[in-house]
Figure 1: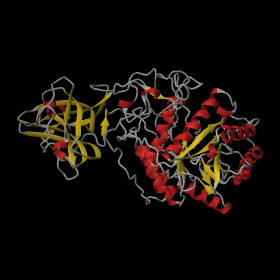
Figure 2: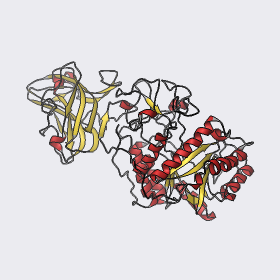
Figure 3: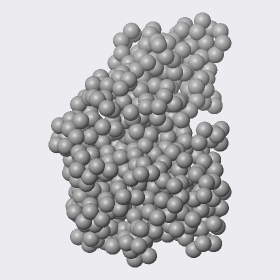
Figure 4: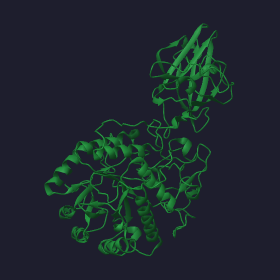
Length: 599
């Protein structure tokens, strides 16, 4: 595990588009460079019993079958696109959507192929193949055999999809006694010997030389004296290689780093200070790093990452460094581009342990086991699709390398469909209301709180009536006059394009006759509304809240093919409205499992 978390952080701080299956006949990344590109770290370390590997055991998901309270990962993967042969059963309850809770192994060739297909599809230049000292210290051990097999499969996939790759050694698990020999033997006997990875046309080069990265030299909790570390770097350079150093964030000042390593850092061709765990604005560090390296004629590889947490493994807080619905990663990418550095390293491609993965992940409570907490892409309160971080990484790649102009705000939608919005209102995993108990302007007349006093309310409640999980939206109030009584509440701020196939669905429980006059409403960017359109439920009931729906005391599903009436428009806000004529008295209704998707 790679997080080097500095405790004095500046903390105020289901479907996916099918990945390209065919190889590019003229791969644009043949003989790729490291400079002017964005690569992602590729762990490739997950395994499971029955995956065909020599390990034949759970690894990195957990030490034994993953089950409630027994896991070492935080972010649950979206398993939708993995082949059935690569899905392995766990000890968890089914997902919120009823599907079995499965996990993948990195060992099957089809899994590695799928990962590189995603890199190609979403525009990520390639991968740094992580090679851990703890895996390769015994060359014939099962862990080394697995690591070599995955490297071979990654080479084939990189060549197939026109992606670059290079070897990144992580010295974790080595000691001062074996550091030099293990790295030298592995490079000589395995990488350039048995596997011949550098012969691949997809192997990345720097200044015309094959690239190798050595991560961990200079960290206080990693092996190697300054003298040993410098000998290691010099040896790799003597092999005709372009050597990158994954070094501590405080490499210039020795903050959080071993003293006396300045000659080691100076020996590298390129430095890549490790930023995971830092929540400070990266712009000052990038500027200072770049100035120092420009003075010595060395190159610079900034690290960017989407967020971090490991509460399921290390008992830290949930969502410790929030992704902020993509804003966190994007701001780091903006800082790199503003500094004029045309390359970066994304940490990481498939790191579900520390939840830094950009690969598809569970979107909300419907895609994680019902009996165990996991981080989701929507944990920050907005619905974020499972492939969002792949899409965002692709855009960051283009901006950093100069193919796209600098844009300071996230330039892509949180979801590209087919599901554009979904929530069961769960606290740590789902989209949450932008507003609670907030009437739209002019949207309240002859309605008070329950019993006729106070104000009507619309807010999530926990531990009461709910359809899935523990929470639901509760609308509550009272009609105070027998004329026209109505209350329309703003709930979610969205930006959803409507096509002819767009469908609205939600679970509905009216608790009384008045509650049957509560319904979901939509406001479009042109000011028009769902309630005043011609849309009906799939059973023919008008979608206007004035048309009573459901049965008192019973959960039902309200569905409407809203695209038939709103095609071509854009949803700006999701409302919940109460609307009734000719009656007084209280109303209470619960809503849950709200979704807007193209059917």
